Length: 97
Image 1: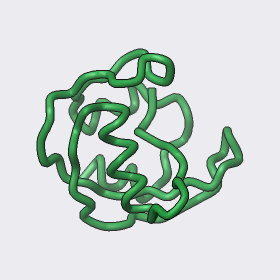
Image 2: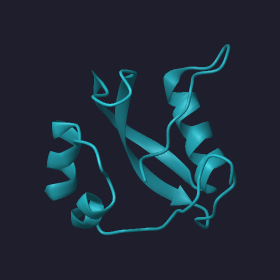
Image 3: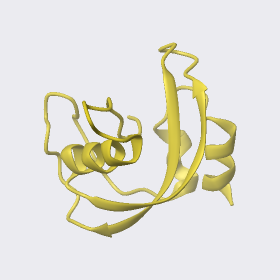
Image 4: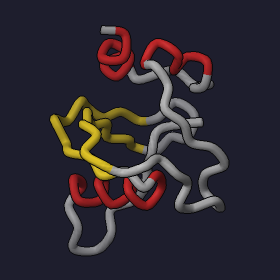
């Protein structure tokens, strides 16, 4: 399990890509609150940029079953039951606050 992710397409900003990917993967529309930070992921070696978002609308469902096998709402403190890699510290602080 993990957070929605994807690549920026041609003529698309990171912010536009984020909203598109979240919708494509979960059927949820979100509003970006702020950029949290970025790091090189310890398992994949890829550069990841993290954003704090607010739910706007939509019913959670899997739109791409080839990429995603499960989606569900959880309480922030329960993230540690699902994420198997180290959380980015600034993300962890937000989830635990």
